Length: 489
Ligand SMILES: [Zn+2]
Image 1: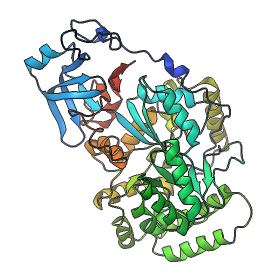
Image 2: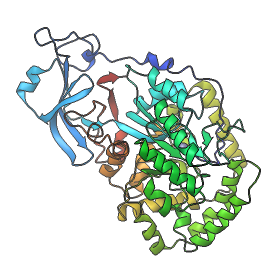
Image 3: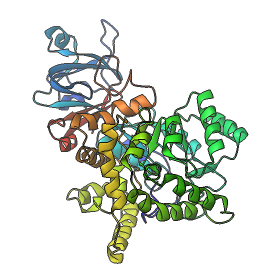
């Protein structure tokens, strides 16, 4: 979560998915040669009683592991890929619908590893549709009310919609950063105080449908360990911010992913021990006030001095503990005041898809930023970009996430910006696509069924007119998106 961006939170209960139901399924006739049944309406083959098969023919497959595989046939039945291979006349005859994709590129559906459906409930209903529009077919919701998220996922069942994996609330300490006490910051957090409440909280989240847990910044080290033990007990991966009372090399290896690269700067400082001691003392002495203020004050006091005290040898030691912990840098968010998303030429037209009320709030926030004409320190933005190459060199896995809609993050659209920033930071185009496909699947242990275009994998696909391996900006050249075996408009 970004603490400084004045994006306004608007309240109001989500009616969940009403708008989304408007998503139309594209009839196969649009793209097919020959047959003209629709995906939903096509009757089973009377001879075999099989569901219809769709073939995407003569397409260049973008594989996040092996790169480009030219001129393939990809056959889809129901919500799965059933065949991928070289052009084969028998497969063609066997398919009900054939899409000629000569000269086009087929990429696995993208993931956004860090989103918040409930950050602004005026936007919740629109988010699924926006994600799909931009080829984002799966997301991790990294903080919000577990019951509302479970209801959202339930409401999207059976229609083209992104797959939602959620954590439930940000698990925080005695003070809760997102406690809902300020109307501009929604109540995304919950307090966990000891081993007992750690176990009962994780148990409740599991029962409510959570897929992983999210540990936040004011948790104390003992409760962090208790939450990790509870997560293990209930077989749930952990996404974490580095707790303020801990360092990245201690907290990180226990988690499956860490968010925003935040607090790594402290661990990488030559005087990290001194900074940590100061931080722990400040937290111990904090007896009343807002958790949000406590965190902001610590970040403001220590972040830049820590970056200025960067020690590469120490940092390498820290990064070497993180080779099994996915870093989700959210570069888009970290660099937002340096590389303003709303100054991109395509931003205004993308923003028109936002609900009017949300767009007005965002425009007001942008106007405020401009009016204040703040002299903004870009040290953390530059540090975040710098760290990508360090992570790559030390073999630390990187995942693509945006924190949308926080910080003017248009759902779906902003993931493509993140991919561009990862490439600018030193990743190859293939690595960036891997970070938005295979890596997130791995976080959830789903890499055998998601993240690539292979037989028996999920039919979540993005058809492109240009090659994203050649230029990552081509990930935006979307012709069509398939979600769970269904084309969406
Ligand atoms: Zn977040």
